[in-house]
Image (cartoon, rainbow, N blue to C red; front, side, top):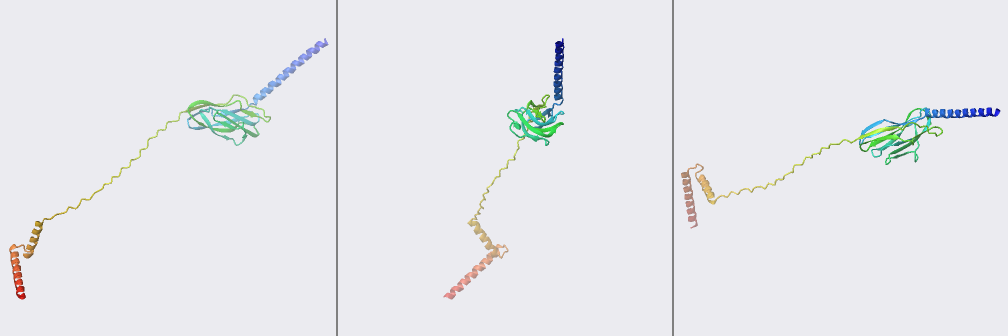
Length: 253
């Protein structure tokens, strides 16, 4: 009978032991969930045109559990967008090492890792990603399960759903270019003017003789225009010439 009581007591104690362990595990799980942090992206929706740039803000919410290191892994459609740059928030100390800091625009993956001195206890901006839209289309930018929020013991406290952004890219507007009309210069016309030769006036001999006699008559008429007076003067001149010649001949003989 004593053995039966002992067996019953051991069974009861064993059952309570399992219940206690289960309770501890449940409380521990609830504590982990209560202090679960996450990585968020903003804004939730992005609408741009091809060729435009836009920013995505990455933030960390420790949800009550101090975060000392954040590993952010973001996936994006590489055929639609590309990462142009990343600006780390000043409060974080970036870890620039292979596997912890990279941008792969071929496969569309960004990885950034940084530490927070003394631990992050409240939501804060982790950094800003600058994207450029390459062509029109729709897609999603999201965090991946590789993102981690590590506490002081390097235990990942990130839980919850992955953050995502709905991306819509429209075609770039067509730019109407009016053809520039350049004024065609007016061709200069060079006109070569050949001077006409000065016409030579030929005066006939008869006309010249007529003019000569007319002038002689005017002189003999003493400018009066009286022909008879001219004849008289001419006769006097001839008579005078005759007598002068005759007197000159007499002297010679």
